[in-house]
Length: 153
Image (cartoon, rainbow, N blue to C red):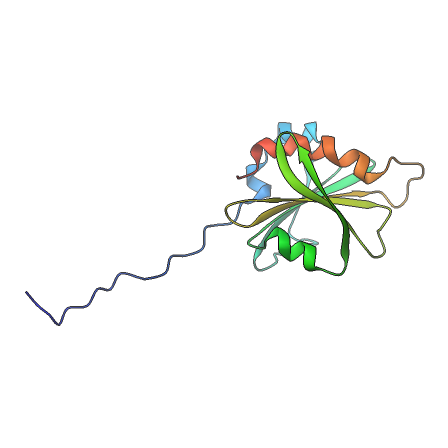
């Protein structure tokens, strides 16, 4: 037996690949969420963000963006620009609904779901150029429920 041999097996494992909403969400689910699959926008304004997988789609009155990251729900709750957190359940999936405080207070509503990889966030943003739209937090449950079955646990 060679006592000088060393085990070269890595002691750490790579982080699991992030869920990619651009490839994982089927067109039928996107249509059920009210958005047009052909309007897909990858990244933030077309730019990949390190540590995130981001994809968005448009509807005539609103847009949705799905974010995947290794962050935790607690990370969201600590952000000073997020507030109005409340527990919600969409399509049988528990999450935390919240609002972003800033220039789009009245236009947007968001939900974040914990996953094994971190979190999935769904953001719904009403059009800023249309009047008399329903509250985004009224639209979010049905929109998110169409996507929930395809999100990782």
